[in-house]
Image: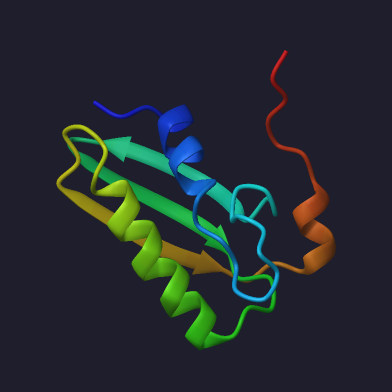
Length: 93
């Protein structure tokens, strides 16, 4: 089964158009839930256009379905102010 770290590593290849930084690098990942061969990921919308959100959603699904034992990927967006992206939720030691 895939791990949250594998999900984050995979999402480093999903780049935001015109910015050319990853969803992981821009701290857009708000939540990752892995359960019963399914990944549900929540991303911050951070003023991304609907077209950009749709593009990112498609890329995220395509990449994460390649992970071992993953049958379904769900992507949702939450509204968050850009300044909220700087809040650190996880620190690796």
